Amino acid sequence: MKRLFLFFKGILVGIGKIIPGVSGSLIAALLGIYEKAIYSINHIKEDFKGSVSYLFPIGCGVLVAVFLFSHVISFFLSHYYVFTMFLFLGLIVGTVPNFRKSFHYTNKIDVLVLILGFCLPMTFSFFSITTEFVPTFSFLSCLYIFLLGFLDATTMIIPGVSGTALFLMLGSYSFVLHLFSNPLEHIFFTFLFGMGVILGIVLVSRLVEFCFQKNKNRFLIFIYGLLWSSIVYLFMLVIFHVTMSIFFSVFLCFMIGFILSIFFG
Image 1 (cartoon, rainbow, N blue to C red):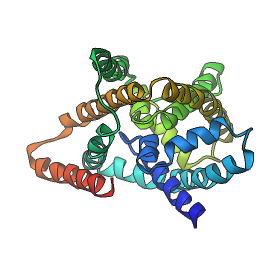
Image 2 (cartoon, one colour; image 1 turned 135 degrees about the vertical axis):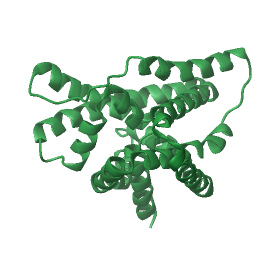
Image 3 (tube, one colour; image 1 turned 180 degrees about the horizontal axis):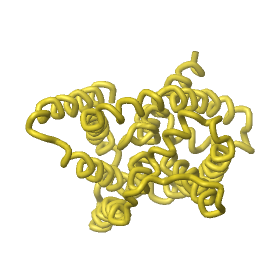
Image 4 (cartoon, rainbow, N blue to C red; image 1 turned 90 degrees about the vertical axis):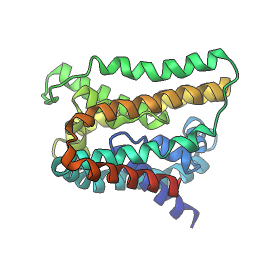
């Protein structure tokens, strides 16, 4: 029964992973499986059986969600882009109150860390790529796909950082979503992306555990800044598509997402 619950929690994490603006790792933190998952990844050699027993059902749930729901998310983004994005915005904004309870400000340095967490992704957004990435078999293209996998793992490990928001900035969201939906269509690209994910999980999980051990409160403040940065970026991405004729419907979608997030939070 415990493994079944972990499997369903993995499905929720996977759904959060592919929804623009929603952080899968933040969902994992809210579901109470994040810190133990990080510990299991980093200490798999010391307790192989226990770590695999905990990580395997979660991983299966994530994979099932990614492969099944990628088609659904892709359909709604293609046909109801603005409404879908504001629903997702409501979902991510609804996680803010719960996350805010997990840390406290102690001095001015904490405020500076918050500002750094907010400004860092916003700085990257100024260099966002407007053209969509089209993969080829060139060395640079293959290296880029590998790095996309590494970035995907980074956003999976660090709570509050949306991988989909980052891919939107890089002009690679359509490519990654298509890769999730059809992993066997271009098996070589899937392999490269997967290798990047594995390397990213191994390296970034160790970094996160170090940050938790060094100063957990300040690390959470940094993540809080990242979270608000993702919210602002996604809002600016869609607000100019809103007209007076759809304003009420858009606001309703946002409130539905916000209320659902609070209710299930």
